[in-house]
Length: 315
Image (tube, rainbow, N blue to C red; front, side, top):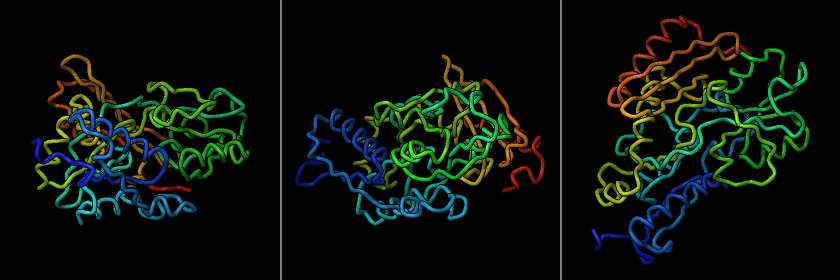
C-alpha cells in the first residue's frame, strides 16, 4: 500500500479531545503508526474536537447524558470525513458505535489500576471519619462507600490537572485517578498510591486506547492492523461484552477486568448500588476464545443475583 500512505501534503487526520491526556494518546497513536510505516510525524495531523463532556463541567455526567458526551462530536467528524481516525480512552466508550463506524484497534494496554491521590494521607484507611473525597466516577464513589460509608463524596469534574489543583486547593482530602493516565502524562510529584485490583476493581477497559474508523475505509483498516495489540483486544472483548449485557454507562457503577494467563482468560466483574450499600461480584476463568461469551454469562449471573431496583440512584 506504499502509494496510499499519508504524506505531509495529504496527512492522515487523527481526531481527539483536547485534554493533555487525550493529546498524549493521540501522539502515541501517531508515533506508533509513523514507526510501523517509516513515516515522518508530518504525515499526520492531530485534529482537536471539543466535546460536550469537555464543555460542561458543572454537572455530573449522569445528569447530562453519560459516556457519549466524550465521543459524539468526534464520531460526527469521522462520519463527515473531517478526520480519518478517532482516538479514545476506552473506558469512556459506549459499547455500541454509530452506523458506519467500527472500533476494532487497540494499543497495548497500560497499568489498569486506580491510584489513591492525597497530599496528606497514604491510603483509604488513613482518612479521618467524615473526610471529603472527590470523584466524578459513580463506580469509584460506590466502591469507596462500600468500604468507608462514613466518608463524604463530592463531585470532582475536569481533566487530570484540574482535579489535582482542586486537591491542592483543599476542596477534598483525596481523590482517585487512573494509573494509566498518570503514567502517560508523567506529571511529577503527584502523591499517588496505586490500589491493587484485588482491593479495587477498575473500570471496564481502563488503561486501553481505542482507535475508531469508518467501516468502508480499507486503507485505514490496513494501516491500523499494523499497530493493533491482540492481547488487549482479547481482554476488552470479554470486558465490553460484560458491560454491554449490563447495558452499562456512566450512570451505572460497574467494574470489570480480564487478564490473560497462557491459553486462559480470567474475568472479574462487579456491580454496585450507587449509594455503596451493596456490591455483587463474580470471578471466572475460561479459554481466551470464550471471553466474550463469559462476559455475557457473567452479566446475566450478577443481574439475577442483584435483583430489580439494584441500580436505583439514591442521592
